[in-house]
Length: 309
Image 1 (cartoon, rainbow, N blue to C red):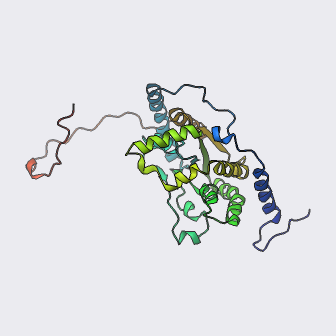
Image 2: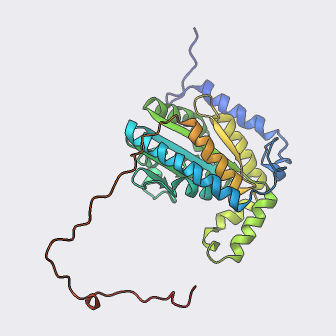
Image 3: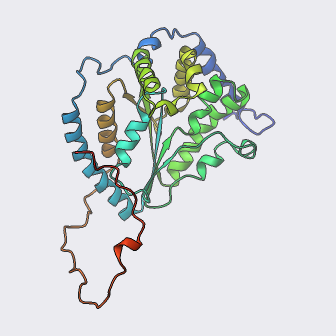
C-alpha cells in the first residue's frame, strides 16, 4: 500500500489537499437561498407561534427530566459536553438558560470564553477550551466554542488561511479524542432567517435590558450574511462527521426551538431516574436556652416594594 507524502510539519499532503478542494468547491455554490433560511430546506415555519401557556407547561415537564438526567450524570460519573453555535440572535442563549434554570450550577456549568489573551494566542488553539472540559459527573455547555475559528475568526480575518485550514483538518481529530476519552459530545447549530433576526435585533435596540448583547461584531456580521453562510457550509463539510454530527435547530420560533433542543438532548443521553425519594424534615431545634440579640441591631435593606400590589 502506498503511503501519502508528508509535509515538513509531518502532516499528510493528501489530507491538506482534500480540505483545500472542499473549500474551493464550496466557493462555486449559490448561497442566495441562505438569505431566507440559512441553507435549510425543511423548516417548521408553517407552524404557528407557540403560546406562552403551552410553552411553560411543556418546559416544566422537561425540566424535571433534565434534573433526572443531571442526577444520572452525577451518579454514573458521566462527562457531557454540549456545543451551542449558530447565527447571532438565533436563540442559543435562551436555550441554554432553559437547560440550566433548574440544574445545579456545580454540576452543569456554562462556558462562554471571551477573546483570547496575548498568551493564549501563542498556545495550541484548542488549549483554552480543553481546560474547560468536564470532570466525571459534570455537564459543560459551551456558549460558542472552538468553532469560532471556522466562523467569526475566518470571516473577519482574525486568523490566517493556513490556521483556518489546519482547524478544519484537526477539529474532527480533536473531537474524536474527546469521545475516545469518554466524553459525550453533542453539537447544536441554531438557524434563524434574516427577517426574524432583524426583528430580534430591533427588539434589542429598543430594550435597554438587552442592548448590551450588541457588539460591533454583530453589526458587521449583518453586512456579511452570505460570507457567514458560506463559512457555515464549509464548516459542516469538514466537521459534520458520523461520530460527531451537527444537529440543526430551527430558531425562528424561540419557544419551539428551546423545547426541541431540550427534548433532543434528553433523547441523546440514556438515563434512569435516581432522584431521591420525598422525605420528612427533622424537627426544628427549639429547646436550647438562647436569647438572640435585638432585631434592630441588624442592618435591613429598605423595602421599596410597599407601593406594589
